[in-house]
Image 1 (tube, rainbow, N blue to C red):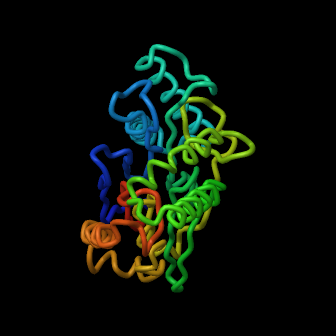
Image 2: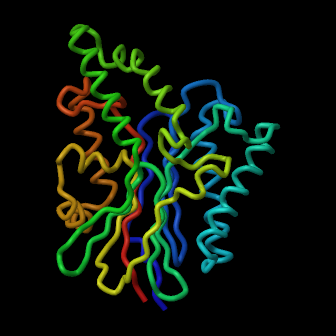
Image 3: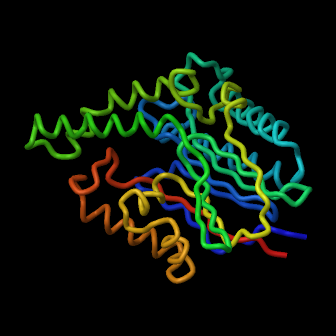
Length: 285
């Protein structure tokens, strides 16, 4: 019987609070990336995003251990219901779209009872696959990527207007744009992301593949994907680097790149350091 073999995994914070979470079972693996809180929390004084990532992580672990063959719709609905129940318990109110709700990205890979491999993605985390024939590909896309690109363009325009401002000052001036983007979450005009409501359920990206020729996989949050975004590695090169260096050394390398570009001049971005998470593995058995 085929199983998930995790070869390396890391969940490294980029700030005092880690809003990422990772998990795996014998038949599944996943990463979660909470959207950093911008205001007072509803459930966690430090970070509603961390709360959501941990809530979702716990429910996925339970569901995928107890019922690994659960149909996709049932799995996602049970996940959403569990998060909604946790929110009601911890916030003291039911989750409604009008609230400043926590949100998170999700990438999940699992083996189905028929031997195929299911890929599920929501928002800007990613699933990378490397095949025996030398191909590498990525699964998962979102309109949030374009919104983030626009935010970085605005930051660059601000830098031209205020050349003596530090990156910290530019970041603070950019928070209103980020807040406006956040308001587009789970709307037809914006992008889809995990939250305690059921608005996102119909918008999870899904693909099913034959895993017979799969060499390796990576589930990554966008913080780890900076190794690709900064063009330190191509996707195939990154797959080749994993067994040679390991996930922790690669995140160390990423942190050095970020620190050396502390004003985001070489690699324009809003956050100097971001939470970086990866689950790297293969199929065995």
